[in-house]
Length: 434
Image 1 (spheres, rainbow, N blue to C red):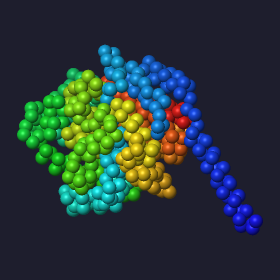
Image 2: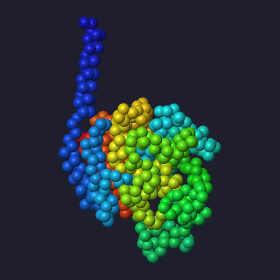
Image 3: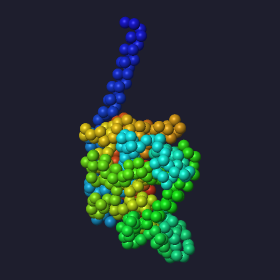
Image 4: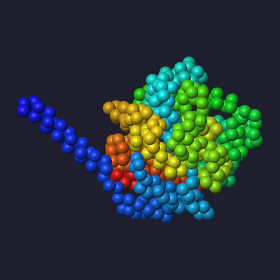
């Protein structure tokens, strides 16, 4: 045999060995009992220490569910235990499981392209400083837009002329919001806000409707929000609000309609925007006691204020779901867009969105998906997202694992960051990948 032929055979054998080793690794047996004991311990400790009142956890692979458990209560009154059908406010997980999944579908269908420009798709931005931003930049958070805008505060004022918030509790500032106290003399702008239904007004809370004329000022503020160098990474809620606007302009359909088409194909019903339209209030987990804007315990309406102003349907937040529904999305993604024989998303699109296209620049973000620089908790190919309310989901395509953790750690207040200080979710993610 010629030397060149021998070399080819040797290379083939080496590659075969590598391939076999990787298959062995990816098919490593999941020790359900050991991992369940660990998760039970972590959850019971978290509940005892007040990380959150309760939660749902699902661990699985592309074709199996290993662990699916509920823990604790809906809130600290301990009147309602957490049930499988209960839905949580996903917060920024909506960026992926709503807007990004829809973008993946539209890109695969050639209804929108990653190099499409914002100003070309959405006329209101045509002659603005952000007109040339592309869908790719929006999804990778490399637009230079600031992290967010507190739009709702322009709808408020105080009758005494004093600031909204104060660091000290007093007669004028009796109620806590985050780590500040709220002025008791908050006044709402009735030019834009109504506390009873009005024709063409958008419902933003159970007793609050918004004049859609307010959106003009929102869009003007977004158009002026480019405060950082384009091409650098800065996570921003505004990016996904603009992704939503691009997709709606391109299709003529609303984000919730586009997302519902996908969820229906997957056969999942405990997921969607504005949950009181499709599930009972009893099955919706409450979030924060909002003493500032809505003066109520938020339940059945989105926690995020910007998403609330957009009627509960937003690219940055607004989705509610139970862990079981999200697990179907995870299995579809691990199966390269296929679920039970149906190609829901194009495989090449799933591959493109879940990679880190800007890794050479030190930007590990995927397209929409959160990805991390490899460290003690995360591997290079892991992808997923987290949410402000205490939600988490990540997938590891190398060893065919996913983890979903849903909690309402903002109940009763967003000041509770105990689960983050403890690296609670990353620890469980690390454990199930061992």
